[in-house]
Image (cartoon, rainbow, N blue to C red; front, side, top):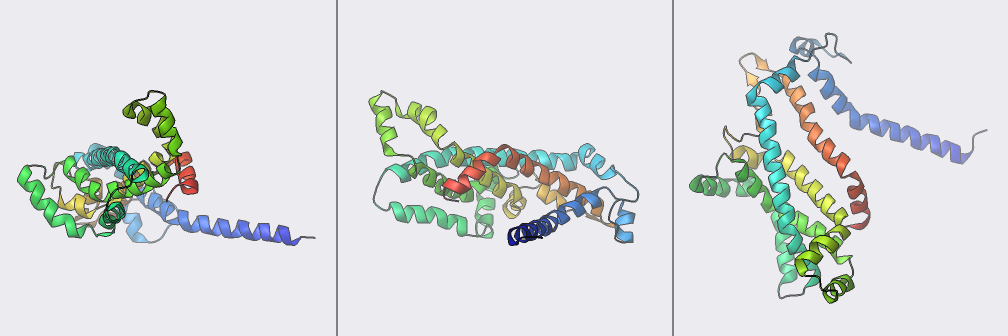
Length: 273
């Protein structure tokens, strides 16, 4: 005889299973399409490849116009993440530890940059970078994304830093620690979860952003997201190649989540996320 607790447990399991299927179905279908020929994709719906092929993946890894897109994307995303965290750490510390005139207004202004759509800044960045020779370089996209990611990182890190007692700063100063030494050796390990969460969000937002990446690049630094929008040819849409590129685009994000998963869990539990 089943008890209410058992029925509730089975109901929760069914709901979770349906939810997971709903989430994983698009990913499965993407992988499924990437292993089919375009003829099979256009012929009808099949739950698995009838004629398994890896030709789309081979083309991506052998065609420089494709694999260079991944290299370019990873280059500017890593640059942006490093720059954003480096700039956000001292800024967040200042907001956390000091009180000055206009601090709340400045903090809100930083967040307001994150609220603005990228289209607002596309033309100014294009004109500026064309004038100083940064157009069509990874640095152009990396620096442009800082406009959105630095405020986000400051907001996240400030929440973690405010949770660290000020007495730790005072004790380190009494013990003779210089501020740089204290900040790197003592303070940063205490907010490692916050740094991991901020780096994760900076990486994700920069990785998936398309408008600025497309506007500020042409050929030499063209990212994979832009390359994927140009798969239409005289023969039509290359669905299999596009699906294979999509599968490979998911992998970096999945790896980042895997390496910082513990920090993300602590961040959602403790930080301002």
